[in-house]
Image (tube, rainbow, N blue to C red; front, top):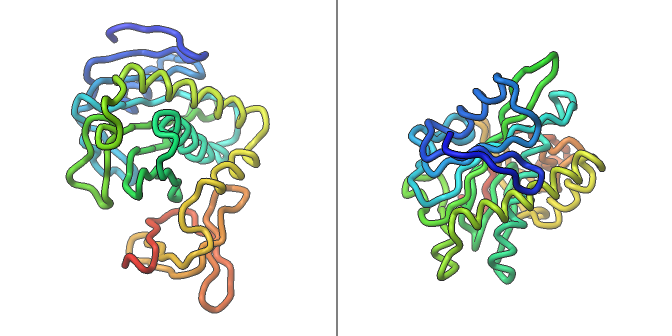
Length: 250
């Protein structure tokens, strides 16, 4: 660890390089690190995203994982992906207030239709319950060249861009506010705020999960964060995981 400091109620542990901030946060959590401990690294050698996909992590972007211990059941932890999406949205909106910013289910933040952030929520058993490791990266100086979807970076939209340290401070402030709201008021208000910023609600989408592909009208998200899809025969189906695309883009 290079140094440690406090910011907006979070204990920030800083590193020059780690395998991944999630790996380092998991180690600190096993050693007893408390709620609101955040690992920040300038680069990752083995960064990863959802479904184990590699996340290219050169120096110049923001890489973080927060240890969150809200004392809630395991089933509630995936709600934190929506908390993180909103925190990233808030962060980028402060820098680019007039930008086209949208949230794509389940956890992508899009700037002008391109991915600006990666979010990974993992859980870890501890003391008879579970904690969350909330990994968030924001593209600042680089956009991944190999990605399933088009990516962008803040440097393409803002000149001069903020420093990594300034972006970290904005993100931690936004995360603290959204996490406080979720802990005190539950998922309802977070869900409403997320839906208000969501992409493609009311449009026909395809959802792919492995070999399974479903088409339907995207009607929003349920009280537990699952997608509500109205199939062609009129039935409603709840989708827990998958990659979403607008049908016109297929």
